[in-house]
Image (cartoon, rainbow, N blue to C red; front, side, top):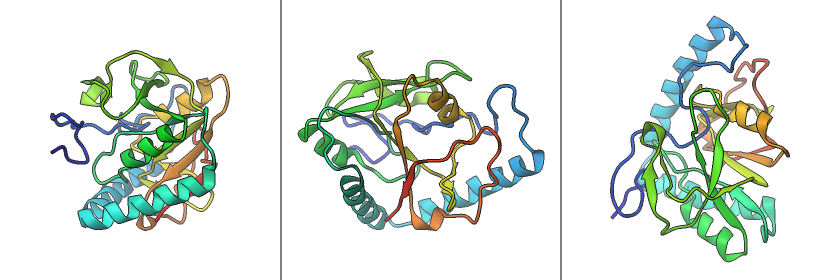
Length: 214
């Protein structure tokens, strides 16, 4: 049976399927404050370790509660494209919720890294579709059916009350939002223990529309 970080059908993947994978690489033409960069690097390590310390059954319960809140926040998703993510290192596993989206007439997509320092693209996906290893071994849909998301669900490493997201540090998320022809609704998901007083947002950071936890 596949674990929460594995594609169904076997095989494990070692890299995060969210929007920032190149650690500590600020978006082009932007110089990050070195002290902030060091602080963020330390906080990422601390928060990921804390997330992994949560028992698996508690993480599953938290994910179920987050799924309920997503249903309440989004309402009907019929005809909408919802970009999700493949869970990594203790992130909320919302793949069961993805099935509910599809059953309600929505479409689910997964992010795909095209190249370094470039925006992501999104490929349509449903449970059971063939997956292949993308860049950094991230599981991606094998069929290159690209879609534009109406809603983006993004896992957070950390977040603050201003809805800024601390991610993995590569800037993919910011590049992607800036490049999309229309702005989607962007919802960050994580656990309450990941909240910070501030992430010390930099000029290139883009806040979420909403953050949901358990």
